[in-house]
Length: 312
Image (cartoon, helix red, strand yellow):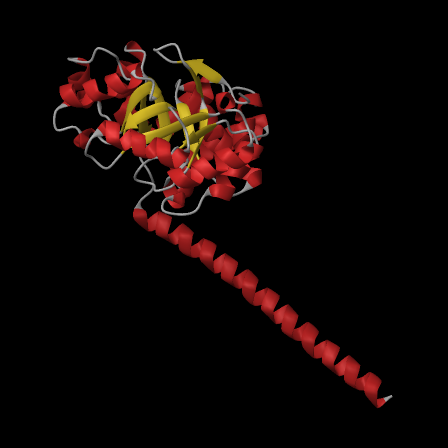
């Protein structure tokens, strides 16, 4: 596999960066985007019942022509009902006989943690999935699950970024003690959702030092916490940028601490974010107006030159 891997608590290898088909890709035909991700080096593809992208992921896998062993596929039990029936439906859509990782998408899907998790343990034993895990589980949810679990979750996929690190620190420590791999989605929050906050300056400074982009610095910070990454993009260049994170010089302990401290101050106010968004849109609008004006002037000039030539 092209990206780095870690060994999960069940002995299976786990690629530390995944291409996700949730977020803005939910409910859409993502065949080409998944294919592009695979072509550019992503071996780990993340989907879910809820996203309604499993069929398209399956098509992209088939079109890639790659052997099953070279890809790592995660999907999630999202819609309730029988977990075994759900995974069989997912496998049919994906065109696979097994997935590498099957997650409980939300803790609320289990009315009873003990019996619900036993079904997941049985599916792993039966070879429908190689690893089992959870998503969006809090510290309390995990503690409740582990009271009766025979097989520990291999992974807990959560929303994780500098602005919620402080509130998730105890969860990360607990997962580490239990050898549960944490996998992050939404890590670029400080760039995509909350620009203009205290995290920006320290991230930009680190980016300048190591010759990286702010996105890459955020992902390097995530990896410094021992956390894996789920990300997505429709841009080939972005995908290459994300995969290149593993080749960058590491952040210093001081840079990591600075991002921690900046994140603990919290995101910018909604007013600041709104102002930045409006400013961005205005700048784009101004550029468009200028281009339109140039086009009109050029049009008039061409017209008069042509007319003068005709009069000659």
